[in-house]
Length: 285
Length: 253
Image (cartoon, rainbow over all chains, first blue to last red):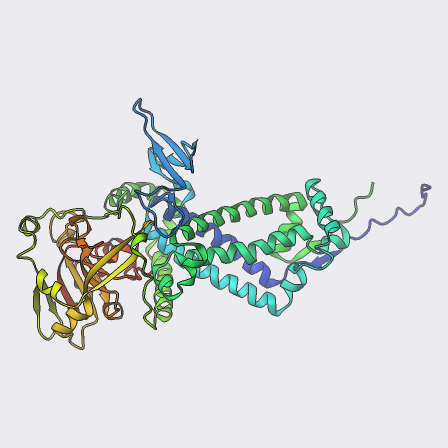
C-alpha cells in the first residue's frame, strides 16, 4: 500500500453511536443492582443466625452440616475462625466465623458485620428487609420478563441463534474471551454467544432459582405448593441451594464488572444509564 | 446461639448501629415502618395460597430427627411450674376463657380423653434449622367447640409458664394465632411427642402445634388460652413474645 500524500488529512472516521439498551432494561438493571446487593447483605445477616448448611428436609445442631462457619478454641487458647466444608477446614479468622465488629471487638459470627444488613446481628430486622426486597426483586424480574417478551428484547438480543451455537462460533468466542479480545464494528452491536449464555443462565436459571429456593424455606408456601420441597430435595437442601446460587450470582457479578472494565468502562456504563453506546471500531495502526 | 441470647447481642450491637451512618438511614423508624409493608403483602399472598386450607406435609416415622433440638426455654423456673412438674401435672389445668360463651378449664386427662390427632411434621426455626418430630394432641378446634367462641373473638392468645424474657410478668412467653389457623385440622394442643409424654424441654405438659408457621409460634408450657378481639392490650401489644421483640406476627415465611 502506498502512502497517501494529500493536503487534506483523511477525516477520522466518525464513531457510530447507537441506542444500546432500552429504558426498561436500564431501569430494571439498576434496580436489580440495588435490590440484589441489599438482598445479599440482609441474607448474610439471616444466615448468621445459623451459619450451618445441610442437605435434605431437616438439619439442626446435632446433625452433620456440609458447610459450617464456626470458631475453634484449642485447649492451648487462641480462637480461630474456620470455614468447614465437608471434611476440609480452612482458617478464616478475621473474615468468617470470627471477625472484628465496628468497635474492634472480636465477634463469633458467620459473616462479618461490614458485609451484613443491618450492620449488626439482628435477625428480625434482616428478615424484614429481606422479604421487602424480595417483593421488589420479584416485581422487577416479572416486569423485565413480561416486557422483554412483549417487545422482543429477549428473543432479539439474548435468544440464541443457529449461528450462535455452531461449534466454530462457540470456540471462537471462547478464544476471544481468553485473549480478552472484544468485538468491534457490527459484531459489537450484538451480544456474543458466551455473553448470551451468561445472561441466560442468570435470568432463566439463577435468579428464578433464588426465588423458588427462598419460597421453599417458607412453611406456609410448602403447605400450599408441596412440589417445591420435592423439586429441591427438602427445606434444608433448598436453604443450601439458596446459598450456593447466591454465591454463583456474586461470581457472575464479578466477571460481569471485570468484562465491563475490559470492554471500556465509560462507554459500557453510559450505555446502561442513557442508552448511548459508541460502537468500538477496528484499531487503525 | 439461642434466640434468648440474641437479645444481649442486639443490645451490645446498638453502639455500633449508632456509629454506622448507613444503618442510621436504613434503621430509621419511618424506613422500618415502610419496609414492614412487605410483610403485609406476604401475609395476604400466603393467605390466598392457603385459602383451601391444605395440610402441611406429614412424614414417615423413619423421617423423625434423631435429636430434636429444644430451643427457647428448656425448663420453666417458676415455683408454680416446679410444683406442677413435681406431681407430674396431676393438678395442672388448662384455662380457656376470654371471649367465649362458657369459660372452662381442662385437666390433662380430660384433654387426652378428647379426640386426638397424631402428625409427623417438620419444625422450621426462624433461625434457619429444621427438625422432624411426631406430635399427638387434641385439635384446638375441639377445645374451642366445647367453650364456644363468641362472634367477636378474632384471636387466640396462648399464655405460657416460661419466663424466657426474665422474671416478672413482662418476661412471660406468649403467642397468638387467628381463627384461620385455629380451626386448621393440624393445629393441635400436643401432650405427646414421638409417642412419649411431651418432655419438659419441649413444653410439658402442653404445647401448641400450628404447622405452616415457624417455630416461635409453637408456644410451649401452655397454661391458658384467651380468646380476644384485639392483641394490642396484651403484654407488649404485638401478639407474641418475639413479636414484641421485633419479629413478625405472621410467621409463615
